[in-house]
Image (cartoon, rainbow, N blue to C red; front, side, top):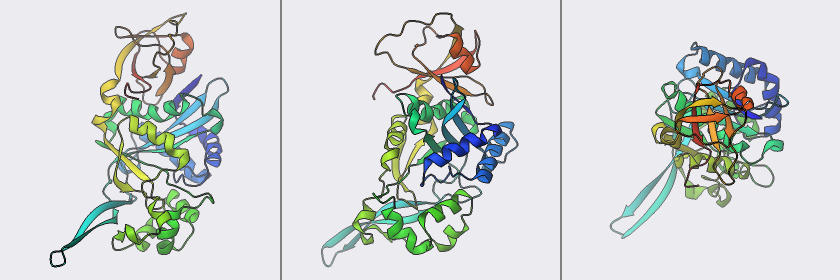
Length: 345
C-alpha cells in the first residue's frame, strides 16, 4: 500500500536518494547530507513546537508499505521570507503616453519583490519516476492540503507554490541566460546551490536595482515568463484543481510561475468532511467509475494519508484492516475524507 506520512530524522538516506533522482532546478531538494539533515531536524522541532515561526516547515514522505521504500517527497513551509528573503519578480504593466503625439505604449516590467513574505509555501514535490502511476502523483501533492485543513492554525492565511521553470533542449534556462547570468556572474546550478544552502545575500547585493523591461529580453527568454517545466506541468494542473492560480509573480532564476491562493478558498476547506471509521473484514465492493477518496487521520506527529475506493456513508467510512493499520486508526477514530479530484475535473 502507498501511504503519505511525515518525515522522520531516520529518513535522511531515503531523502538523499530521492534528491539524486530529482536533477537540477529543485532548489529545496539538493543531494546535500548536511542540508537535508538540518531540514529533517527542523521538521522535528516544528512538530514539537520548539522552532521559531521563521524556521517552521513540514516534509512528507510517500512510502510503499510493502517494501518500506521511500518513493516520493513533498513539503510545506509555514511562513517564507521572515528570516531569509523570499524574492520573486512581480510583473506589472505600465502605459507610456504622449498626448501631443497621440501615441501610447503598454510595457511589461519585472520588479524584484518581497510581496509573498509571510505566505505559507507548497514546495519540494518529487515522485520517483518508477512510481508515477495513476493516483500516486495526486496523493503526493494533495496530501498537503489535507494537512492544511487539519491544522489551519499552524499556517498563514495565504499560500503560494513556485513552479519549476522552462529549460531548453540543452538543459539550460533561457531566462537565466538572458537576465540572471548578467547580474550574478555565476552559473545557474551554482546560484541554485547557494540558495538551497540558505546563502542568499548575493541576491540582494547583485540583483537589478531597477525594473527590467520585458521587451528588452530575447524572444526565448520572454517565452519562459510564466512557463512551467514540462516535467512540472502535471503538478501545476493538480494545484490549480485545488484552487491555486498564477498571478503576477515569477521565479527570479527560471521565470517559472508562482501560484497563489487564500487558504480558506482551497477546495479542501469546503469539500472535505470529518467522518468516523468502521473497520470491517470485507470492504464494500468497488463500483466502476466511482471516485477515489483521500483519507487522513487527525494526528500531528503521526499524520498519514491514503487513497481508498470507498465513499463515506452517513458520516461513517468503512476501512479494511490494512487501510486502518496504514492510517494508524481504529473503530470510532475520526478521519478527514475528500474526493481525490474535484467534480469539475
